[in-house]
Amino acid sequence: GNKRKYRIIDFKRASKEDLVEGTVTRIEYDPNRSGFICLLQHEVDRGDDPSMLLPKHVTLSYILCPRGITIGTKVQASKFEALDMQVGNAMQLRFIPVGTLVHNVEITPGKGGQFARSAGTSAQLLERDEESNRALLRMQSKEVRYVQLNCMATIGEVSNPEHKNESWGKAGRSRWYGFRPKTRGVAMNPVDHPHGGGEGKKGTARPPVNKQGRAVKGQRTVRNLSPLIKTPRWKVKMQKKK
Image 1 (spheres, helix red, strand yellow):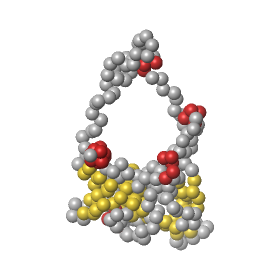
Image 2: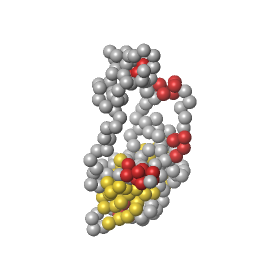
Image 3: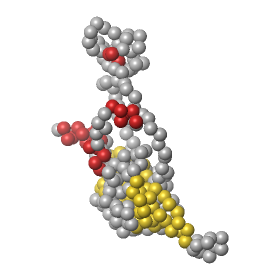
Image 4: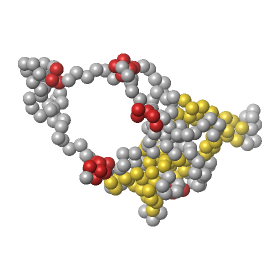
């Protein structure tokens, strides 16, 4: 596929104790993810340091672009204080009101956001429990799970919600992304695949297996659930069918 240059994204937003402020200067396309990213400009006060020519030093960072944000918007991030409920602001879940849509949610405090990072996604905060130090979130997949209250999250949804409606249009575009053609097992010879051979179109002639002969349909796909998952997504789907 085509070469891509990786953009280093700040998933932590506030790794230190002080308040981090930034101004959105650009909204950009990122070939490594489905949502857009935006460039933040931070002004760091250097105080009386004589080595600095200017009292303020400008630093830049990329973050996931929230839906509805515009150039010139000021966003903030803090680990230890409540901020305005403005799209793009990041804080701990303990400071966010119940019912708010959030994205870029941490699983482990301080590790950086891992949930709800792709285009148009978000998680909804359902409840907070100060005694157990846990928050209950409904994920995009409708799975309901617990996360620690001191995990960071960003207000709003991820940008580019129309990504799911995008059509690649031709086989060549798949090749740009690095996807090569896949040959079906029934189209091969017996030496190449368990489904191969036969006169004419014979089908698999056995329960479907992969190239190594292991069953690929009817096998258990759900792993042992984490104790943090209250309602798995497969159970939500079963309830909808009823």
